[in-house]
Length: 162
Image (cartoon, rainbow, N blue to C red; front, side, top):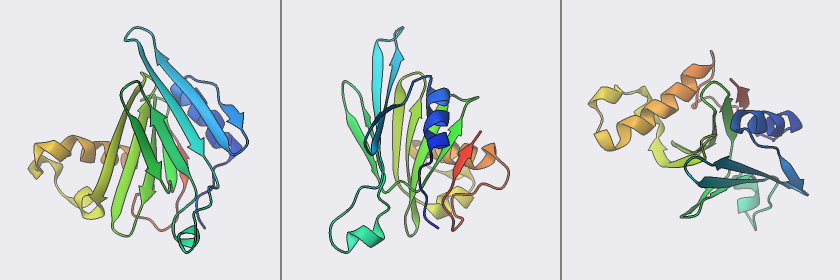
């Protein structure tokens, strides 16, 4: 079964990021502020987006957008999330045929995107990887290790509360 956002997911995301969900039809928005640093992230979750033609059956219809003063990041085809209240971050991910993509949003109004990570990287010794990707692989591995039984490479897409 494909991943579907539930009401409890939106509440959990809000608790984790310290922001209230604002609902507009099939879009849920959050504004995450860090007044000390003067940073704001506007997070938008668009659910059940219909893609044209054959793509409708191939791409999950959830788009995650994080907008800052200097960039706009998109994760198309979100297949799950991990909301970790202790780390105060939400990892939205999209699993493809052999790749994992992720958009990480933190309560400190910080966000990161990881794209086109071959799933085999998650099984390798991260200490032997190029330094450019070792930290992001560690983030993926932390997301896997937060909860017992959660793996990015399982067939079923799920949401997880940490």
